[in-house]
Length: 94
Image (cartoon, rainbow, N blue to C red; front, top):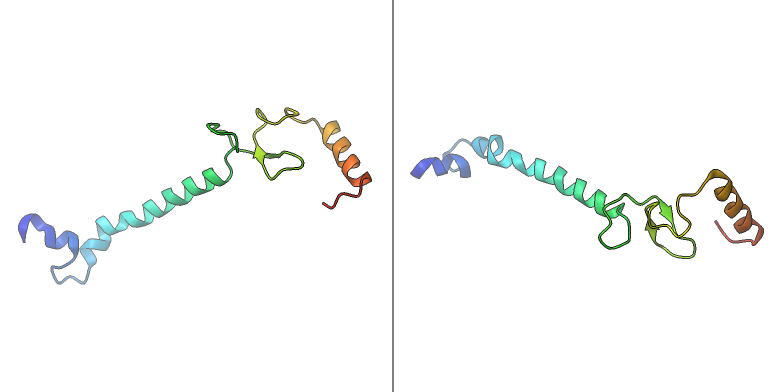
């Protein structure tokens, strides 16, 4: 074989052992890397160019933004209780 290419491709009669123990083992690592990137993009702030993880929903929209871009800033416990009471009083479905 030229430069051991048969070992890399698994065509040397060893039933793909060399492929899966060498280059093929990187496929699982790339899958984990892709899953990590996908999870980050799903939970990323909806503001373009923001790298922060989004945790706060903007009321009345489907946007989820970080505390920096939220219109009300970082909410306090009192503010959360106040908004919750207002929404419950108006009969808004949760």
